[in-house]
Image (cartoon, rainbow over all chains, first blue to last red):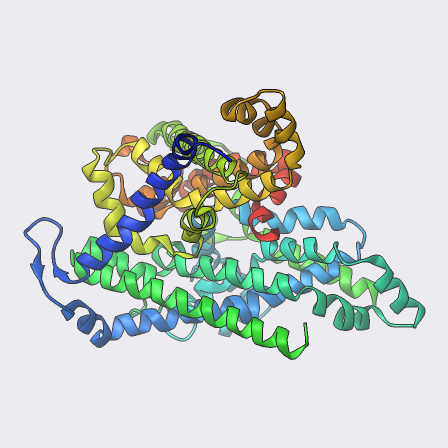
Length: 290
Length: 267
């Protein structure tokens, strides 16, 4: 048992911060989303006009779709790539520790710097990609990757998909917890490496998949640097996502109410996608009788 | 079969790291060399670009700003999180609800709070100051720090604090003499996570500052893109100056950093 004043003393600082940075902002964002406001003049009550406005705004719809495509890129490309790397390194080939450190390196460098770097890697004239294509005699494929309507979306997600080091380490940590007897038994039964991966490792890292989905989901919802720095949301709003939409509405259009209506929708998208993921994982667990 | 796997690993390393190598080589070239031969080595390895960046831009100020913001926000979040986590090792009424309140923020995409954070910082008078940014970072990272430290404190056997209690130690003494020293590894893990996120954040550093004196490195990188429009090698040199500190620290502490970054996930 513990005295009340001690609880208050130790708990209150953190509670005050949580109220200031999570509870109040949520309420305040909800309030602003109902106002017409440019941040300086008086607020004018606008009811649900801001929400009507964003739902009729094709750029907002595009932003929602692109945000979901970021999540899809994470689930369908980034995480499987991270798993593949983890499976390869889990067999501890020569120099696996070095590979592990190298693969995580880009995750330690800021997304701002990576965005800047890949802006040049994909640059029309200077870019690494176009020049490699020219060297290989495939100059016809060279294009302004980030300015081409067909490729911009994928091109500006490319660094995120490739730099899967952190995702890989989460898998590796889980794989190293698998009891060695399982793999030894499989080896005695004559299983190949790929069979061991498919029938033992992959089913046992399912909870790591869930963790990786949730972590990368948070990353994708917060994503802001790549669209801002690599494409500025262009060409023709092709790469706008929710983070950039909110930012532009607030800073450039000075429509604070619209920005926060979009902000609440971002939170809603996050809640829906997280909820769906958790529900799906529950259903899959039950099917497998766990 | 084995050589295919090894080749694949080398190929992946190449794709991941070639851009960085290319950037380093290009930062030693002149603008003309870069456009004439994007892949060639520079005719003479010159530091002119680096000197130009260092003399024309207060890179050291940006760097110090980033250090101050990361350190202050980390210390603040650690202080709040250790205090709260410690009290969660006791049982009291509504404990799980308080935990939910403090940890629940993990699932909120905090860039949705652009407008509220901007005005909170403005109202309390820290707009365009490093402390304002640090305050927001501490707030944003608090849920995860509480989670990491609380999970670590849960692994400390309760017998230890019971023994301290029997020996006459009060709540404060048990905290400073028993729990805090023992949770050092958990606190280190959390602080690595906090430092890396604070160091790399762009949006709020950009939103909450205005003057050049309060720019962090990340905001500065953003401006390099526009300021050096005509002279790419100089932009590359600026960029390398900005990322070298992260790479050096990672090279020295890679195992600890990898552990810290995945700590939130493993539990």
